Amino acid sequence: MIDILLGFLKAFIVGGAICTLAQLIINKTKLTSGKILVFFMLGGLFLQAIGVYKYLVDFAGAGATVPISGFGYLLAEGAIKGAKYGLLYAVTGGLSSASAGVTSAVVFGYLFALIFKPKSKNN
Image (cartoon, rainbow, N blue to C red; front, side, top):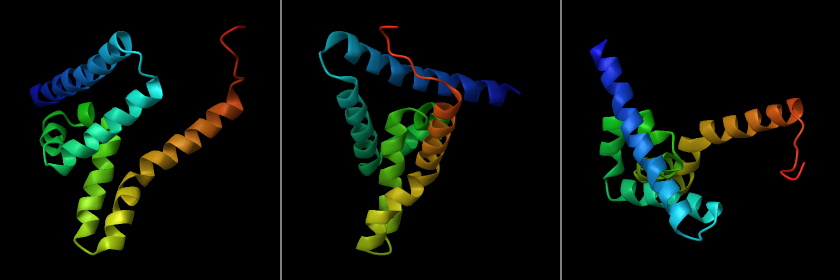
């Protein structure tokens, strides 16, 4: 029971730190949210490429994989594993490792678009 609570605490601290950093960047800079998302995704990719992000994932689990930096981590991890089998697998490895998350985002986004009616912020 203590291990489960400790895992939740680690995930909350690391995920919260990543989100806090993003919020500080939003508040203190004039960067658009799209640019910030790309920077965080590339940050996760870069940190995994140099072998650092894996330790964060091992420590915090979902706290490190759920934020957008976790998507960059998945792309790099898949490319690194695929590179062992050749250049083509290095290119497709990242896509195959992240395919479940991308597919579920598209499917659930479509389902919720059918269920709910979008409104503009002016209404």
